[in-house]
Length: 120
Image (cartoon, rainbow, N blue to C red; front, side, top):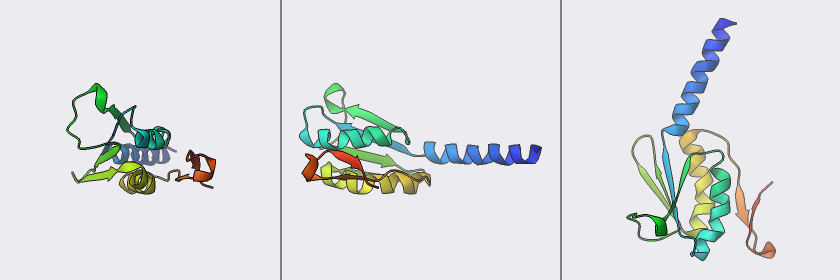
């Protein structure tokens, strides 16, 4: 029993270190219509992954445009995802790849006003 607890504890430490080894920043503006499209998806994913939500109008950030996701990987690579097309298409895969966790897949459907929904 003691051996199982030790193995379980070690597994949890590895899992936590994998998730926290990456840093994810979401740069957005409340007045940006493209940011408004991806914001709900990013907030939903932030329940599973550590994502910093950074409003560019409330701080001094060195970014060229929004919406922007910047992922600093555990091996110090920077992955940039830009725009309302690229972020939904690649964000989940990048987060999953960097953390080795399963995650939700999102999609936009113009027939329902372009809002986000979970793909089954």
